[in-house]
Length: 248
Image 1 (tube, rainbow, N blue to C red):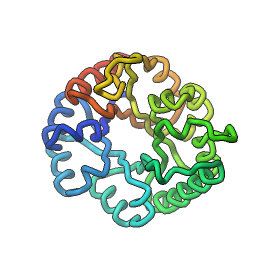
Image 2: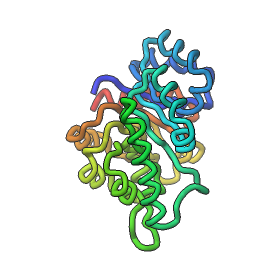
Image 3: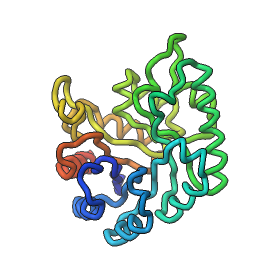
Image 4: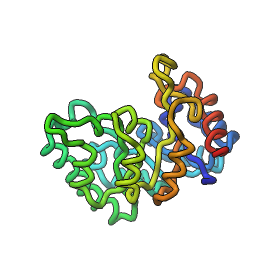
């Protein structure tokens, strides 16, 4: 691990983007991960990346855009140099309520994979916590997704697996061959960092990143992406987190 990435969503409350990119370059990041907010002016984002010598090899795109306007996704990705496209989320009102529904959603992701892989991209799913919460029949949505979408890759968000009640080591063991990227984030001890939604800077929480990195080395993972969903200070998070992973 040498080139560390940073999910720009972590700094959404600390504009402008140009300032964030300057900060990341100064702290030793080589890459960033895009999300919807930085695609509004793609040319400006590209210019800011180039000015700071940063690349954007991965990006998040909503299921709605992925399905409704593939050409727009492809154009954005090609302009920014994105190589791996990840579907990052499913809004509460869009989430299936039973196993058949989750299998059907997996089939939609498999269909999207067909479109984007033909265009030369890696395509996969980025998890949150809800995919690991058992349904009434005991089935696990994330497994249903994978079973119905044999071709898709996975950007594994380890801390969300834990919050969903899953064992990340078991998921890495069983589905590690799909992992192309990992979100590196940390969970504060119970009752702490409540103003930051219970998240922590990497290495300052409860997630055993040393053991996880060792387990992930057996997978094809290429991108290690720092993320904090609600930092009070994004520079503090970025600085402390990269220091932690560089020391592992």
